[in-house]
Amino acid sequence: MWIGIDDTDSAAGMCTTYIGAVLVRRLQREGIPVADARLVRLNPNVIHKTRGNAAVCIEAGGDVATAFRLACACVEEFAEFEAADTNPGVVATGVQPLPDFYHAALRDFCSIEEAIEVLDSIEALYRGYKNQRGLIGATAAVASEFPDRTYELLAYRKEAAWGSRREVDRESLFCADEMTYPHTWDTVDREGDVVVSVPGTPDPVLFGIRGESPGWVREARSYIRSEEPACEQVYTTNQGTDAHLMVGTAGMLLEGRSYLLRGTVAALPATGPGGHVSFLLTEGGAEVRCMAYEPTKGFRKVVRALIPGDVVVVAGSYKGGSLNLEKLGISRLTDAVRTRPPICPACDRRMTSAGTGKGYKCRVCGARAREPDIERRERSIRPGWYEVPPSARRHLARPLVRGIPAWQQALCE
Ligand code: ATP
Image 1 (cartoon, rainbow, N blue to C red):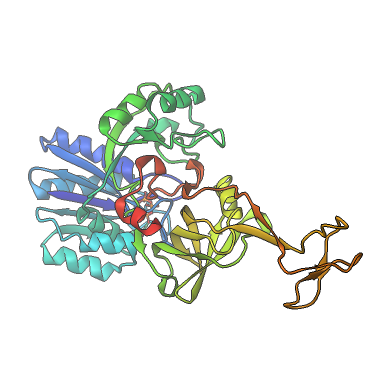
Image 2 (cartoon, rainbow, N blue to C red):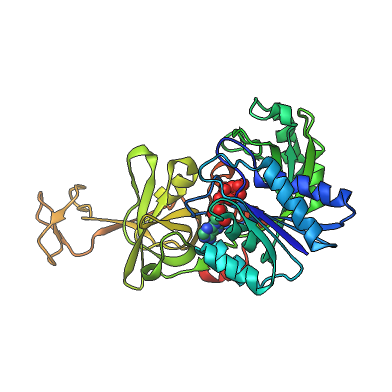
């Protein structure tokens, strides 16, 4: 059976993954074996999300009604019901819905009615609290399938510590990264010299370690010194897989969806107020503005080095009329050339234009020349893939350290 939970937290506290971890333990205590705990990231552009638009799915064996009762009890005990925008949803089903609803919630927008239709079609047990919005995420969670997956070990704080400063030894996090990278990633951001795996929000999470297998995240965890956690849960997740991206074309991008598209740089990148960098990409006669925001730090240097004519692949969400860059593939760099009037061989002075199509003339001796000086300038960037630093990475974005999937590479060639 599959148990789905979503929308239990608020900016003031709680985390759906914590409720998932508690439920795993309570199911096991009831003799219900748990096969998998999944942390399911959905469309990062939905407006009602608290933080990262996460839902939880627990795959278990046993009685659906018992599991549903335990799941509802957990949500009723821990969810932030008082928060205006917290509308929990709980689902339990012995029949897994088709993955279509998961894909829709991951890449598009869904309604509560659509979720209920799916749930009724498989005779699932479900409860939507308050305005029932959490049923969307809970339904998507039970419908989820991960052809590509990563893992996250989440350590949770004891209840008495919630809201207070987290005690996690910074050096030990850098050590965990050093000992296990590239099998784990985003524990720390070495370029920015910041810790990425310890949140600053008042929720129960102490730290989260992301990696390619349960073994590697546990190995990384073994180096971390911290306050004593209440419990730890390894989740299977679609984080770091680019599952949100669809191949797009510049003229057909829809607001709030995420794309990978190929095009040609149409205008020199410009740095605007706040340090945000933008450039125009053209493809098939349509243009799209691409943005690298200030938090993407050093990534902006790569973007600034683009010039008109460069052929690139861009990945990111289309919001407010621009594509917010998560990564950039440089397919072909155009020659950066500067054309100037030639130097007069007799006077050693630069000539001037003799008029349109008439070549160049030396003002001193009157000598003439047809061809200009063409100066090829060295480009500071090379073809290949570039990404935002870990501190600016979205949960679903696939880190380059995991390699480039064939469908993305094909677009970049
Ligand atoms: P939490 O840890 O509580 O899950 P969060 O940042 O993941 O926090 P939620 O509080 O779950 O955000 O809020 C997201 C809300 O949006 C949920 O009610 C969920 O059901 C809903 N939702 C998720 N994906 C979509 C979608 N694609 N279309 C419409 N609603 C969605």
